[in-house]
Image 1 (cartoon, rainbow, N blue to C red):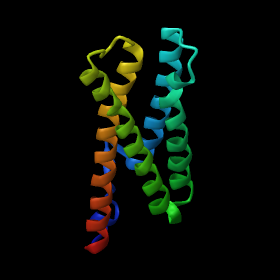
Image 2 (image 1 turned 135 degrees about the vertical axis):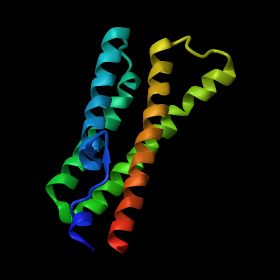
Image 3 (image 1 turned 120 degrees about the vertical axis):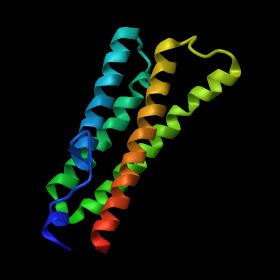
Length: 137
């Protein structure tokens, strides 16, 4: 492997995947808090994005802090990304049921989780593929 490839690291929006994951977790926590406040919701379910953001922050931080275990921690992070995406799929149930956006903020959160969870999971998979290619060179 040449020196140029040693310094290459997969980036999303000019951030390493670990930092991107950390910021995504912060975004999810902020989303849950802000949407709960704006909507006046007293339901714990309005904080689901926040609950899912916490493990992203924890495991992303651990991947940054303990680079020898980065692979393990980032695999845990992508599992949470998939859970976020799958949770967002619940918006399809409201669409099929004919009551989509009757609870505007809840359905907006589901759409957000669907789209961002998909994008995030896709970027994680791309980073794994990149890492494997770098390792094989």
